[in-house]
Image 1 (cartoon, rainbow, N blue to C red):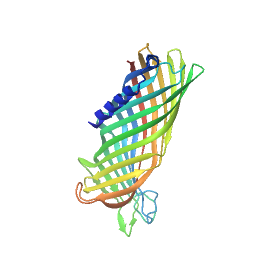
Image 2 (image 1 turned 90 degrees about the vertical axis):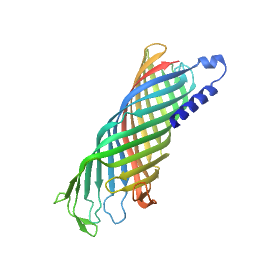
Image 3 (image 1 turned 120 degrees about the horizontal axis):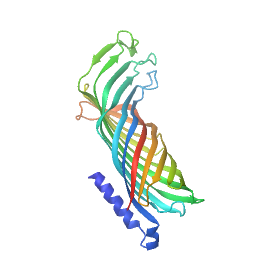
Image 4 (image 1 turned 60 degrees about the vertical axis):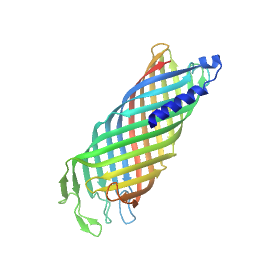
Length: 323
């Protein structure tokens, strides 16, 4: 229902905002673009250490997307002749990940107060249970020399990822007491797992300014873009099934960057086909962490400081249909 409401609201605002003058309406086009592609990279879950720990991190969990295929739709409102006239443009993109195996989930801990050596390691089969990415973009396009255009815009994005780690194994260094550990390769504690061991839900929201430039030659168009922002918010929930522990983190800040490239071929006046490549990277997002036992019950208690990040390569194929 939430996705339907967003879609309906966008369409209503778009059409209510269209000027009534016939000449102005003819200067713009509304397009629908089915899109298919895959995401390749990982999401990061971080726990920062207490002052007595020696390592830079207490825990680092990497959730693979290697790869996750998706389908979606891009709705686009833009000038008919971007190389000739300045104009407003906007777009709404929705991507829906196809659930399935997506690589591995790796968990590393550095718990020693004596040194910065690895103390715990575990690895599990990762499954992407839900991935949804919503991007709304609006800005202004400026033509130059009838073969170039430059766009300035703002992108608002919402992302949701849900993973589960299953099966796998762990290797834990022997605890010697007093926060000290034996080397992890000296008679460590080992254990294998069957079934679901851990799950992770991560939600992101950010607003980013951006700029792009396009070059057209006959029926071909190349466009490069770049976005950067510190206006980032993230909330996540981590459930350790074997320990019956639930963690919740609320984080903000850091930096998001996203360079992108799109190559398009104009088939005719109503159809384009495009290939898109972009890289979305987020780092440095931090905030308070909370824990409760058991999962789903009791009150959350403070549990230090957490962080989150991601590195995702997006490759997509789009077919633009002008209405």
